[in-house]
Image (cartoon, rainbow, N blue to C red; front, side, top):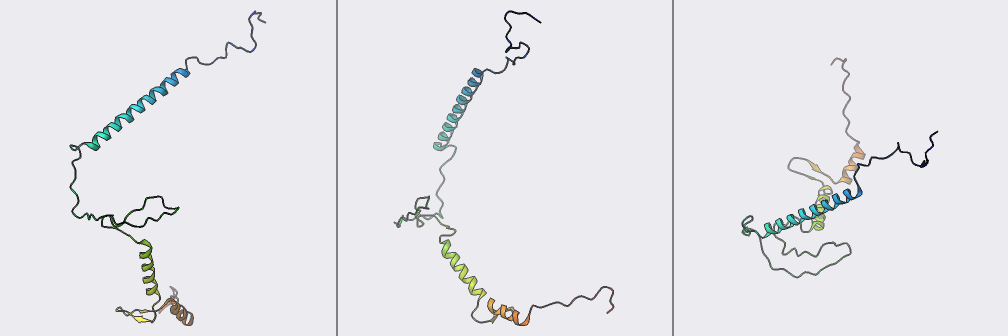
Length: 160
């Protein structure tokens, strides 16, 4: 047994960590440098976009579209609801072509035309010779006559 005067049972000189790792100061300096470089890049980009927005050489002013209709703004009642997340838009000022300005009304018209097509008041014959019935009348005819059934094909071995 070794008799040393400064023996510490909690300290083992053979078990130690690598002292050449990064120090906290090195990590902090890297993060500060990264922040400074990021700020510099943001500043340069902001300046570039500001220059390009005001530059007439890179982006010459475009002539107005001759098809664009400019109308004076018509005062419209502003309806605010709790679900509205955009400011009120005046459709009278919105340029043409407007794709769909009254979607609920358009859908109502579409459903009415489809309902009229599916449920005609009287059976009629079209130009192709097809007879059009309402769905309820067609269901009654199927109930009375039954569904059309194809005869079973003859077995392959049978002779005609």
